[in-house]
Image 1 (spheres, one colour):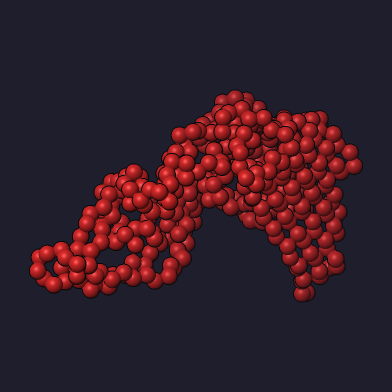
Image 2 (tube, one colour; image 1 turned 90 degrees about the horizontal axis):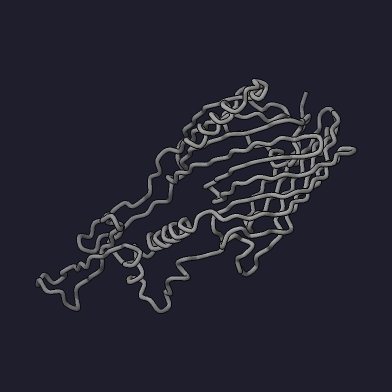
Length: 358
């Protein structure tokens, strides 16, 4: 929220021309929905024989959106709703060249909860398309797909016959990818798993069930361990329960904390792109392709510097939007995009046929 307010205030402070905000829309929205029902799960206490319902009951899902947007629509686009609510996701937002020359921007903050997991997603970008150049700055933090980046780009542009050919440089920042601190610092083949759990901050407590009632912990009694988080909260009453439901979470938390300490990494890349746009009442085609073939690492753990098996060094962003009105009744469409940055795939595909009955 602080970032969003800062950007809005910055734009307001440094932009004296009211035309900058002409045709823009500020929106606030919220929605709530029923949560998914998880499969039933039960646990029996061997000491008492009591059966406990351990089924996870998710809280309701919600999504709150705040933002301001100024994005021109292409000829094939119709405004889908009367009001903007932050759920608008158009494939052509990934196109390098907008529908008009001039300034476009999106400042979007989304707070959501799904299946009990909370996310804060940020998407802020500003693009200016001139006659011979494109300039863009962006910050994206999509926690649901764990994609985070910020940076900017500057390209030269040549336009002819519906084509736009661009070339320039793009700066990108990203978290550390390709490192597993847990695997680097622990070895479960040689280290006892409970010793590793201690190192991760967990503690255990031995207990036994005196089946014979002789107040002696002997061979015939059942025994196990309670497990506690670093803050003292009990999360499991057996080793099996801890290993099945909590050990993996402890590893993930450890990795996340270690990687955050390394900070954001910096890369500078060359970028080449080509796009094509054609529109008529009965057929339209909008397609583009951006390729980032060469990279320079500006920090130690930049992805280009990492030695990762199967790593690809060429990043790209491509998209296709095509529609045809075959007749008054029949129409077909396809919308697709595919972006691969740092071997993280981010894609979307929609296709369909419409047939109208009069």
